Amino acid sequence: MAPTHPVHIALLDDHPLFRQGLRYILQALPYVEAVTEASTLPELLASFELRLPEVLLLDLQMPHMDGPAVAQELLSKFPELKIVVLSMHSADKFITQMMKLGARSYLPKDAGPEELIRALEEVLTTGYHFTPRISRALMRGVQQPTRQQPAKLLEPDHFTPREEEVLRLICEGHTAAEIARHLFISKRTVEGHWQRLLEKTGTRNVAGLVVFAAKHGMLEV
Image 1: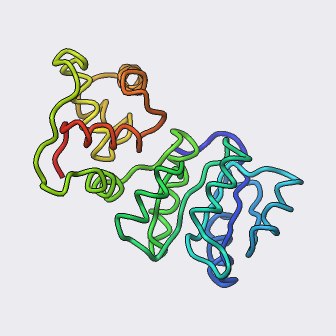
Image 2: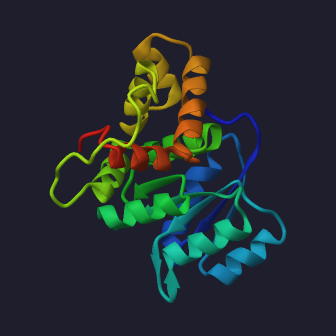
């Protein structure tokens, strides 16, 4: 679902041609009002003084810059900023680190325009774009070396059967709308289960839910 309000997007990447390609794709979207480009963090922060964007597309690795450190610094100063990572690195450790830091999605740099647009629209309308690749990386990141199921730390009735079902589908990367269709319930009902899962697990986002579920042996990789 496309956002209904004008959106400002920022790009932080040291490759001019790549930024120009992204700008071309983004400016064609009817809801994108402005696109800001930057090749360095100081340049990006200077643009923030004029206007804070809703979304930042962040290159994970740039000369003289540590992507995770940049994300951490930006989110400490601008917690409302939605960061979508674009990277050539697909190893679990990079995905896990960035999602735990608060990134809203993690995409390969060779993703097609359709995938980028879908991720952007989901981040803008639901707050995140979670893929099966991200889920698997997070689950593998907390799995014990012995690959044995960790002991359950929860009472059997901590979650209702429906909440466990919703949690499993969330961790597989499904959106609220997709879960609603799968379970034949309303999207609002799914969102209610989603909120209760966050409250019961003491987590703040989908990445937290996946980590929690994997740690408690509720999922299999």
